[in-house]
Image (cartoon, rainbow, N blue to C red; front, side):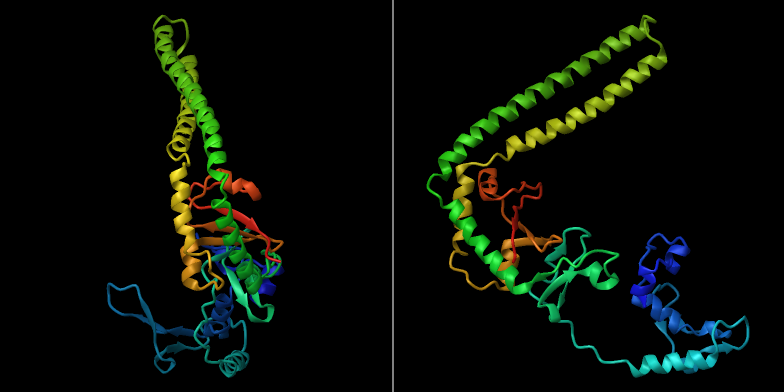
Length: 324
């Protein structure tokens, strides 16, 4: 019912009431709250809940036998007979739910488009987007990935990473690449510092021009505002370049990574322990391709060798792999 109301475009109560957390999506809990609300029968029900204490915000339900009921206080939306029939139907469909099964990629797998966690579906032997599973195709597409295929793809990718890191020619290639990047970043930093210095000098000139009545107060404020915006952008660029220079990859990082990956060289079973030691999160694209964020960093020379990826500021490696 929630999915149908959402797909047909009906506005949920939370959004109608302009609640800060109100969205355009209907939820099962909202539907249940409406179906089990006895006020729609035209009667006033009081004393359905109580607080644990005067200072506590926690509410506890009270047995229906102890409710205060005042009949026919307002116009009924449904008959008491219909309401009771719905309650009986709900009660007949109640079942004891088993404890939720935690699957291998629970809390690790996310939809690349909407960011929601992926839900395991037994009949599909894998995971689908949580938004799609709850609200249908209007919210998102299924982003389906088969669990066994994803496990195989990850294990194969780890072996490729190990092969890349152990390549004999890698260190010399990396050293050459690093030198070029170092020179480029140093040139960028020099230009940025020069531009920052020019803006600082211009401040003094502006004050002199204002004091000499060469420019008006408004002209002075306009130029100062423009300079402040430019300075802010330059300082941000300076910080980014300095960060790149400070975290430039070096051969010692490669050796450390080699040791880190050695323990996974003969892994042929992906256990939860290994998964969480290796991987921070996995995003699944609409076509089922997996984007893996590893928990260790790799030099750009390795990242871009076989994949079209980018280094992320969270110091993890992002690699795109095919799962099918």
